[in-house]
Image (cartoon, rainbow, N blue to C red; front, side, top):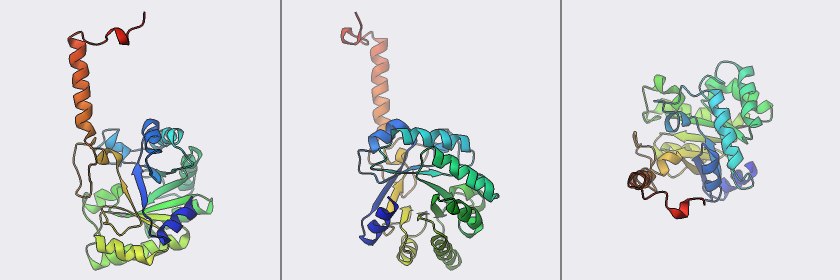
Amino acid sequence: MLKNFLQMKKNKEKIVMTTCYDATMAKILSQSNIDMFLVGDSVGMTKLGYKNTLSVTMADMIHYTSAVVRGTNKDKVVVVADMPYKSYEDNTQLAVENAKKLIDCGADMVKLEGGVEIIESIKSIINEGIKIVSHLGLMPQSIDKMGGYKVQCRDNQSQKKLLEDSLLLQSVGVSMIVFEGIPEQVAKFVTEKLDIPTIGIGAGKYCDGQVLVIDDLLGMFQDFTPKFVKKYANLAQIIQDATKQYSKEVKELNFPQEVNTYK
């Protein structure tokens, strides 16, 4: 599948990725021309009720990755699993052990946030034959250092670092890079310098592919909506309307009816 993505970049065919957190959604999305599922640590905010991704654990990621893999048509979709905060940054041996746990769950690749700062962990994981997706720009696991969810790479120094990190990651064998929350022209410039694909989220149209959080795309996550999100549906309203109707029918003794009842 990796060679397919490299060929897609060469052919200028866009790669489509969404997050996915459970088997039911994986079964649905496997029929939807999606190329890649990201079992993101965004699960902390979308499913677990945390204010950010920092509280997500390896146990969480193993649980959700396993669920997604069970529902995924692996002939059609590649599964990428996020390595959560503090699972890889400070200890290369721990990084390898945790990456292997996600691969053992059925993930095809793992995703890590950062460049030169974590390069030894990245090398160690790749040396074990595990494919890596890197993540640069706005890195949710570093929001305390970045001062919140702010657009990155607006100045020359940070743009230079983005390019240097991207080229370094490519040189050690990273398979693709996610760019989050950076100016479109910066993402375009770096994408054109790379042989490996880039996936954008809030990084404009010139990346080799796009990823959105499925709960944003479907209009289920209501706490806030980033500028880069397009809501393709409003499932929150549909769910509310359906359950209100269910409640009304139960209270008015209109459900269950004979057709719903065993004799």
